[in-house]
Structures are given as structure tokens and as C-alpha cells.
Amino acid sequence: MGHGQSDMTPQQAAAALAWLAEMGADEIVGEMAIDRFEAVAVVPIPLPQRTPGPAVESIAPARREMGSGLHLPSGQARRWDDGIGRTAAECHTLEDITAALSVFEACPLKKTATNLCFADGNPAAHVMLIGEAPGREEDIAGKPFVGRSGQLLDRMLAAIGLSRAALEPEKSVFITNTIFWRPPGNRDPTEAETAMCLPFLLRAIEIQQPKFIMCVGKIPSQRLLATTVGILKLRGRWREFNVGGRNIALLPTLHPAYLLRRPADKRYAWHDLLMLRQALDAH
Image 1: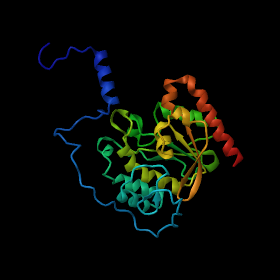
Image 2: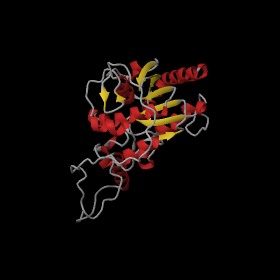
Image 3: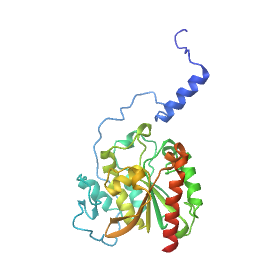
Image 4: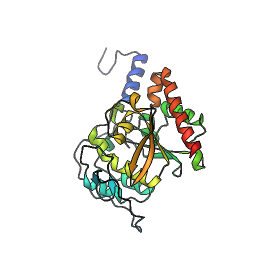
């Protein structure tokens, strides 16, 4: 082949492009190179001035403080950055959290992601779903669970009478993530990346005040319960999660992406969904 030509077949070229897109190389580059891993200075996050909301209740003394007003789940071994904790604590609405994250530069994932992917659904919902991290479709749309996994999740929720589009709090869900920017290649987020997002997730739980939390997948279940136990052992049992002085019933379950790979395990997820439906009916 001459210079500039390729010996790839059209099918091979299409497969190579699909692989590059899956790895996160899904945009046309500019004329000049940009070092997106260059260190940037972290500047204070400007937040709207507002009358402070009600004080966050203190929680058990055994919990580790994180900034002002926020606390980690018991058992967390790492001391999170006080500055990030204070920034999260200064958010009094979900809109404040979105505004804070939109100018948040400390997390390196933001440099390689296309969009912030914080939340979707009804903020007044009785159920909060917490996923792992955005994938390619979520990164493009800026909303959690919109790809194949999200379509399966919507069908699963519909089977027990729930929808992210429902207006009634008892019939709707509010969906957020443990990580708010897509990790390159859909890899698992690191502990440091989770640490930077966790204060905002905890603050979102305090503000949204769900009656029930369902952790969808390994990452949110392990991070909120401060454990390394696998999701197959964690799922199927209600746990008590304390944040901001409130005890919230938390149920780990399997991620839809896992179910797409292992359809035979859908029976476990269906069992978990029925547990959630029963809890909602008894509330």
C-alpha cells in the first residue's frame, strides 16, 4: 500500500472506530494539541448567596466528620478532604450541588469526560437509586442510566410501578451516581475519585431525603456501606444507612449491565425489586 493508505477492510475499520468510541475517543480533535492531564489550580467554588437552610443534625459520635456539617458512613478508613466537604455542606439544594459540580476542577475525571452526569428523575421521589458511574451514552446525554443498562433499569422499575418520569413521589424515583463523570474506558473509579464525589453524594441524600435507597451495583453498595464484600453477598438484604442524623433503609442490588451479561441472575434482581415494592406498600 502507498503512503496514507490502509490495509484495513471496511469491516475492520468500523470495528476499530467502535473500539475507540468505547474507550472514550469519540470526538474529533482540534488543530492544536491540548494536555488535558496538565495540573490545574483548584479555585474556590462560587455558590449563590442564600439564607442558610436548617442546620444538619449531628450523627453518631463514631462517625468521622467531613468538612462542616457532613459526615462519612461509619467504617470509612480514609480522611476526606475538608475543603471539598465544606463546599458540599454549603449546598442547600440539588441545584446548588449541580452548580458546584459544574465548576469543580479537583476530580481528574472531569478533564476527560464530555458532560457532568449528576442526576435524573423526580427530586421529591420516595426512592433514590444510586448507580456507579456514567458510561458513554450517559456521558453524552449528561444523565444517568440512558444506555442499554438504563433501558433495562426503566423496564425493571416499571414492573413494580415506578418511573423516573412519574410526578407522584410514591411512584417515582430519583437517580444519581457515585461518580459524576465518566471514567475513561468505563473502568472502575479509584478510591481517590470516589473520595472527591462522595461528599456531594452524601449531601444530595441529606437534601433529597429519600425514604428508601437502592444501591445499583458494586461500587455504590461498597462505598456507602464501607465494605469490600461482593455485591452477590450484599444484595437482597435491607441495611440501615445513617446520614445527617437520619436512618434510611438501604438495599443493594445487581447492576443492569451485569444482568445483560448474566441474564440468569435477573431472578435475584427481581427478588430485590419485590422487596422494594413491599417496603413501599408497607410505608
